Image 1 (cartoon, rainbow, N blue to C red):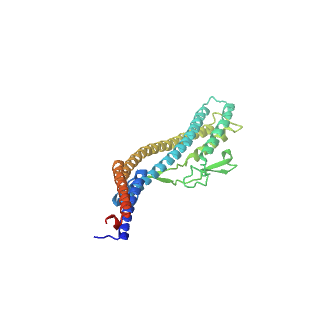
Image 2: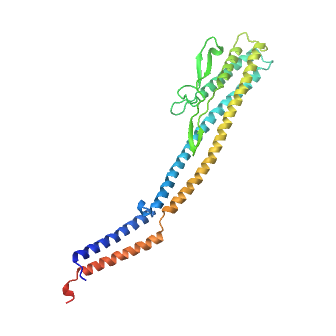
Length: 305
């Protein structure tokens, strides 16, 4: 059987190209460590890896959301804790003021401390975040949590009202799981009003320590301070509980992420020993093909005469 030179060259070129393609493919696989360079290399494996990669991206976003939320809740907890310290100091000051052995001068000296505590509570309640939004106003983040209205007729010359709403800002931290990231201070305005009344009563030039009206103001303020302290402590407890739950959930996400990464590695990693053996075989085949091609190409009819 005779084979035309053009047919022989085409057959050899096709064989060399096929071998070279396999060598290139194996080289790329060994360089990347992945046996699936294209979906066609393993359609089923490629689909599984794609699904796992997508799930891993979602889990990663959940973990990022948890980290950001924990930072925000921790910050809110610190502000609320600062408020509870101020309220506790105010309550202690009121207990001292209710002591009937105080002189008018003693009570008037407490006005400065009470005013400082009131202003500190107001300042903390109207704290803004880095973007200039009020953090304790619910979803009305452009409005101060405690709105002040100047009223010369009111004790202390002003009234206080909650300027936010009970709206909740939520973030997704799991499949079907959301976490409220904000907290409001509705109720604090009542304490500020009572503190204003106390400041006004103690600033009265005709102050009498055992005046029933003065004692009523102090008792009312103490009761409101206790109520507000319980309110803030409850909010702090909720924030702490939420952070503990998110820590547990983040650990679960971390376990899922580790499982996904392990599965992706198992599905896509290259068996270097097998790849090296195949690469050596194709290189040997290429070398033999080139030698055969060179030898046959130099033959002519004169070689057999």
